[in-house]
Amino acid sequence: MDPIIRIENITYAYPDAPGPALDGVTLDILPGSFTAVLGSNGSGKSTLAKHLNAILTPASGRVLVDGMDTADEKNLLPIRRRVGMVFQNPDNQIVANVVEDDVAFAPENLGVEPAQIRRRVDAALQQVGMYDFRLHAPHLLSGGQKQRVAIAGVLAMEPEVLVLDEPTAMLDPRGRREVVSTVEKLCRERGITVVLITHHMDEAARADRVVILDRGRVALDGAPGRVFPQADRLQALRLTVPDATELILRLNAAGMDLPADAVTPEACAAAIEEALCH
Image 1 (tube, rainbow, N blue to C red):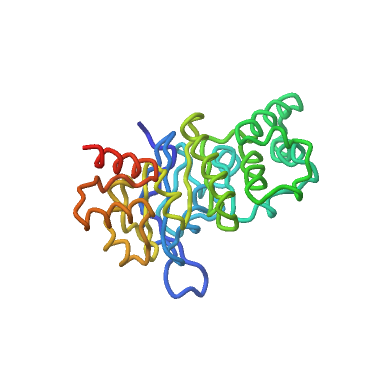
Image 2: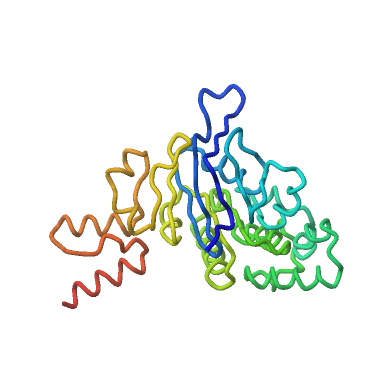
């Protein structure tokens, strides 16, 4: 299977920064996959996200989206149609006074026919569970609901890839659960490729793949069940482990023999139940 996004040895530095934000990053993102990108502050994860739809372009190396080089200006519009971005603060992405008008904003600006816009808006709001709020004022919604509306606005462009740059950073635990559940459903049921930038380990545990950046380089890359049990390595990278992994490691230290790759609460609970029943 060919990657939908290919990142080839890219570097990028901000003016006056003491060092590069990205330093030789190479990654392939496969269609339909769910990739979580983690790292401590300053690791380069948000800079990487902005390279995926040509908000930034690399100083060296290249990023290919469906074979299109992000550095070629003629590719800008088709790339941004394929790769949609959702940012930390949903208020910065909401531009209208009614939910459905906000979701319609992007396809209207793309010149989509009105009948198609109606179909896209309804479908996007249904996909994120916000259809019943389509006539509501966005400023009256909760943080999690606003972020789901922001995601719907991106989905209305019918992208192949959804990149979310710390979309739950400003949300309470309930809002975080709403957004991550929505994103996971879009990937698993709709086949949308998801790249989630996060600093919440429990969110990353739900992905197919975890990429950990450190000082602009890839430090770890693999399935959550292989990456998260490396507690000492994660600590050296100034990161913790998911709560489920922490519990598994403590119980194993106390004499149990539980699978270290049970990194989600559901997998952890099932592993403990099976151990106690045998």
